Amino acid sequence: MTTRRALVTRGGWEGHLPVEATELFIPFLRDNDFEVEVSDNLDSYLDLDGTDLVLQCITMSEITAEQVKGLEAAVRAGTGLAGWHGGIVDSFRNNADYSFMTGGQFVSHPDGFVDHRIEVVSDDPIVADITHFDLHTEQYYVHADPTNNVLATTTFGAHPDYPWIEGATMPAVWTRTWGEGRVFVCTPGHSLADLDVPEVRTIIERGLLWASK
Image (cartoon, rainbow, N blue to C red; front, side, top):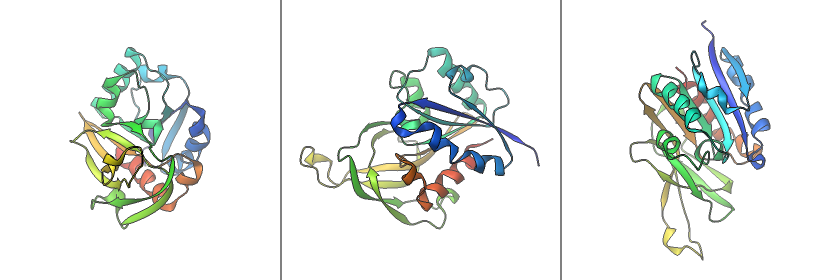
């Protein structure tokens, strides 16, 4: 079998444990015939030739125009981009081009940690045999691109400070294409415990494989 190349980029806000979180998935990638390179330097995005998948876990932080241009060009040409939670949809708030590519931007988790349900709304293979699952963690309110292929959603309950969001349904898992490339986003994944929820883990693992060239 041909070996594929995955670049794991990690860093930014330490509260999302970017090293520990990505280490949960590196063995999975290697077991699926990926050669894995790990980087904490976004200059890695300046030359992604031969990279089949970028797994990114970088919350907030900043990216230069040259770095995002390199990533965007690689995804447009066929490199996959995948990630979860703030590591992909709360990255690089200074760069709208990045958010345009990923198809969404975190804006709030109004309740902090809260019980909520993730409902599968697609028959896509990434979510096959999963109908819903319940979490007690951050529920992400996002601004999302209408061209996303939404695989799962979450609906917000009443909030004393923001009563108008009651009943708002947000995408929680989506895929999209960007040129020849594939982008996969899963908004659950704040903690290592979240990433160990079987449904979350399965969806992310399938998403990584789907996004790869």
